[in-house]
Length: 392
Ligand SMILES: Cc1cc2nc3c(=O)[nH]c(=O)nc-3n(C[C@H](O)[C@H](O)[C@H](O)COP(=O)(O)OP(=O)(O)OC[C@H]3O[C@@H](n4cnc5c(N)ncnc54)[C@H](O)[C@@H]3O)c2cc1C
Image (cartoon, rainbow, N blue to C red; front, side, top):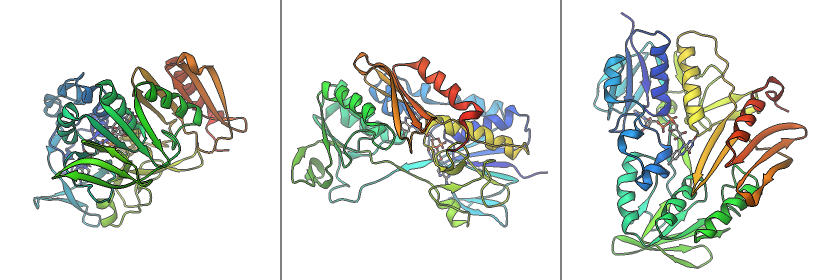
């Protein structure tokens, strides 16, 4: 009998790969390992509707419990894969169990970056990545009066919107000069900054954090690099995420800014594939390797990996897309804007419904749409056309 196909990581990507293997007719043994103590779930609501309390826990789950038995997917909850032996084609769990695999998929995702600063381990200091993070964070959010968010990326700004909506005093501290600087043009940052300022969120740009200060075991202030001090009984550290690559690295797989795969999701080791946030993959479309942290990539790359595992010919080269919800505004991004030399605005910034296209020469690279879903869908179609697909 053949050894099972084994998936390590039961997030959005690992789950989609398992579903796809079954829907494509794979009827052999299939084992899905997840080190969290939850059914596979979606993360985006953790900083949006679920954080606010507008969404029930069950709605986070990607599939109900019964699905796994019905599809003969051996889902192992709370099971951390701790070793991978490429030559012997087997994995080991923390509890010492071993399992041989025929094909292996690494879908290990990312973890939140931590800050190494005095006071970072005080009570009241949080990161936001998993369901385990949300329960204590929500409790603290309900009672906190002064909230400081370190990092003005998507998670930080979505959290700011929820906290401000609850009437909390919110300050955001960001070393860069504007919000969401890594991914959007100044016009889009400006739009969101105005939105947050209107909602009484304080924005502190171009400044770092020296230390977190406490009263007893709990945080009560954030000391900035310019000497200013912000009151804080809750601090969210939202300074990005790093790919979980230890297993791959320790077993000798090629790893750079993520687990290196080709366009068929194959790692440098035979019979081992990888998909989702943890992967560093070639984009012909953008002429470089990229690592994406998005639901789009987690799902589409998982489908591609499952097809490749089953021996189909695959050439994964997606149009990336992403969204963020802050207050009543929805930002939808199609494509990657890095390397643009001009932008073009459609619509009116003040109306709250507009889009911004990014070009390199004549080539459209990306479109950010704000409260403009039609513009987003058109952008995805345009970017998917073969004429758009070649790197400049
Ligand atoms: C708060 C938040 C909000 C977000 N909002 C958006 C959004 O609005 N739009 C969007 O497109 N994207 C959003 N994202 C990103 C999106 O959720 C991720 O891109 C997606 O979850 C990636 O899926 P993944 O399966 O690759 O990784 P993950 O979802 O991280 O899953 C990986 C899983 O593997 C497990 N694992 C790791 N190592 C092992 C091991 N050795 N053994 C067993 N299990 C292991 C991990 O614990 C984890 O459960 C958000 C993310 C967060 C955290």
